[in-house]
Figure 1 (spheres, rainbow, N blue to C red):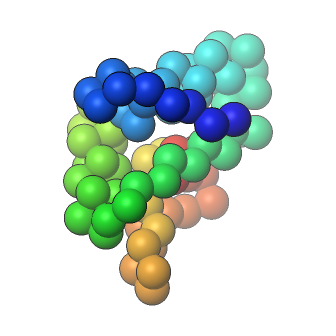
Figure 2 (figure 1 turned 90 degrees about the horizontal axis):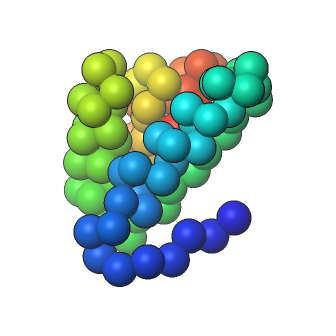
Length: 80
């Protein structure tokens, strides 16, 4: 699925969390693999930090990132 929208509408921060929450509620959270792309390294890392903070966690858990040779993710990462 590709989501398009205006700048600041939540397509990178809110929509992925809504999808994950819906999958968890349906008992399919372990199947979730949601990827959000960003055009710049700093944007990808900042986005991961913001979403992880909103979810009350840290980067490298349920929320992670992968940029070139740097990666903060585990087997249980669901939002990348």
